[in-house]
Image (cartoon, rainbow, N blue to C red; front, side, top):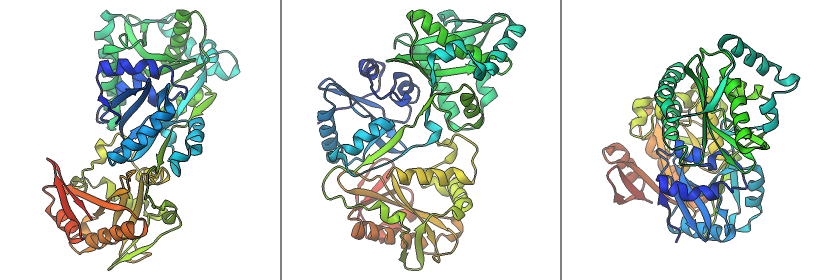
Length: 476
C-alpha cells in the first residue's frame, strides 16, 4: 500500500525534483505553495517507483495531486486501491484543463465530476513582456515606475541578504496592518511568508527586495519550474508609490540576469477573490489563466450515487418537512445560517476562521461555494423547509463520499426552529434517500458533548461504531 510521509523540510526537499518536472504547471503543486499553506492540511508525500503523489486536505476532505514521475499509470492503480482500502474519497486537486481531459478519458476514473473557482485561477504573463514593459498596453506601468524614480531615485532590486531580515520583518508587519481585513487567509499568508523567508535558499528559490531611501519597500520570492517563474510572495508598502510594478519588473529582470537567458512565462498565482488584487493582476495583461479544477472520481465497485438526480430538482418529503434544492432566493437565509457562530459551534464551523472565505461576506459567499462543491461532486445539499415553497429553515447534506461507497450525512437547523422535530425528520429522510435511492452506506458524527445531536442520529436508526477524543461516530 502507498505510504505518505508527513510534511517536514526533508520530505519536501525529496519531493522538489519531481515538483520541478511537473508537466502540468499550476501553483498548487509547487514547493513554495505547499510550504506556505501546509497548516491544517495534513500534508504528506509519497514517492514510489520514482513517482510522487502529494496528499492533503482540501475543503475538509482528502485530495491528491496527479502523480508526477516515471510510473503515473501504476500510481493511479495504487491510488484507487489506497482510497478504497482507507475509505477515502478519490479527489485530485490542481488539475489543469489539459490534465482534466486525460482524467476524463481514463476508464478507471469514470465517471468524474469537476469544478473550479476563479478566485484560485493562476494569472500567467509573458516573461519577455514583463521584463521590458514595452508597448502601449504597459504605459500605465511605465508611468508608475517613472513616478517611483522621481520620488525615490533609481530603484534597487537585489537579492535578499541575511542582514535584511529584521527590516523585512518590520516591513511585513506594516504590510499586514495595512491589509488586515479580518480574513483567515491573510494571517495564513503572513505566517507562510515568514516561513518561506526562513528556508527559501535551502529550497532553491530566489528572494529579492526593493530598496528605497535605505528602507525595504517591497519583497518578492519565487521559484523556477520548467520555463515558468512562479512568484509566491509579492508584497509592497502602500506609502511607496509605484513599488509594485518596480518589484515585479525588477524581479523578472533579476532572474533573467542570473540565468543568462529569458524564460517564457511568469505565473503570478491567484487573486484569492480580492477585488483590488484582481484589478491589479489584470492590469498587467495576462496572456492566459490556469483554471485549477478539483476533480472527484468514482473508482471502485458498487457506487450508484446519482448526483444528476439532485440537479434536476429532487424534492424529498419526510414527516412535516421538505428537502428541496437550495435556491437563489435562499441566499440571505443561507448566509444567516452559515454566519450564526453560536449555532454552528456544535457543527464544528466558524466562518471567521474559514480560509476559503477571502472577500467581503455577502449573500453570494456561501451560495457560490455551495454550487462549486456540488459541481465538483463534493456534496449534495438540500434546504430544509416546512412546505415545498416555504422559507429555508435549515440545511441537510451528503458529503465525504468515499471510493468504497460511504457518505456522511449532516443536518443543521436555525435556532428558532429547533426542538420541533424538524432536524430528526430531515436527517432521517435524507439518510433513507441516500441508502435506498443512491445505494450509499451512511455514516454520521457529532461532538461528544452534543447530546441533542447524538439523540437525533440514534433516533434515526444509526448505531455508534466508535468514539475518539472529539466525536462519536455512527453508522446506519
